[in-house]
Image 1: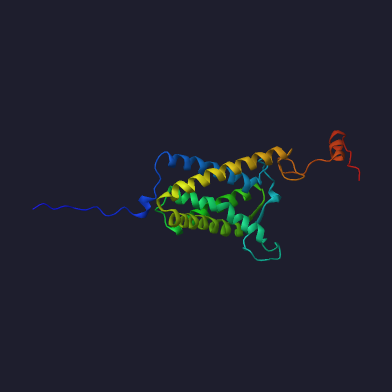
Image 2: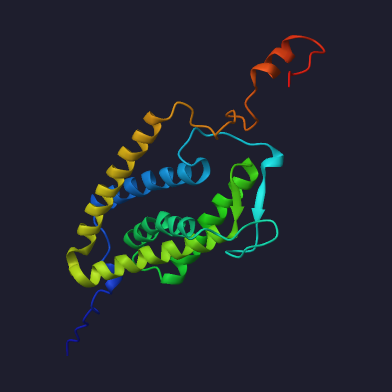
Amino acid sequence: MTTTTTRPAAPAAEASRLRMPARALVIVLFATYLALLVWIVLWKGGTPWIGEAQDRVIKLVPFADTSEFGASAPREVLANIAFFVPFGVYLGLLAPGWRWWRVTAISAALSLALEALQYVLAIGSTDSTDVIANAAGGLAGLGLLALARGRFGARASAVVVRLCALGTAIALIACLMIIASRRDGGPPGDRPGGGPAPTQATSQARLVPNASPSR
């Protein structure tokens, strides 16, 4: 008597898995996105610089208006969500078997790392609101990918990869335009090192001993 074994149907994760060279393209697009994300979050699209110790700001209470900080602006919250939507999409493309909570946790971990870097480098404010909004953005990106798979079926990955490539091209062009329009990419009124720009009077005072800046 001959027994035959039937293989179970491939799970949805296997059906959604990218093949080469599409996977290689997604990895390149993902790396480009991460580089742009770090540049925008840390230096707001300007020349990389490092601040000074007194410039460090940290807000532990999310969203709310406190005695030291105002309430989080809705526009900034929405921007922080939007910045991480592609992160959830890319994770969903590269690791279709990951559950939603894992993608959300990794999004929050990346956001926390960026906020910690802002504190260490003394550039911008370290805000717990950003971590929550970024994690929500990663989850939203995964949700959009799930909707695309339900709408386009087997063609979903190819459609989403094309949209990611188009979005990356547009983002790169926008970044080049920002760089071209800025003479000094550092913080307004500051040197790349983070300190205040010297005035003409203070510059003369450094050249002349015991001289004091004119008022």
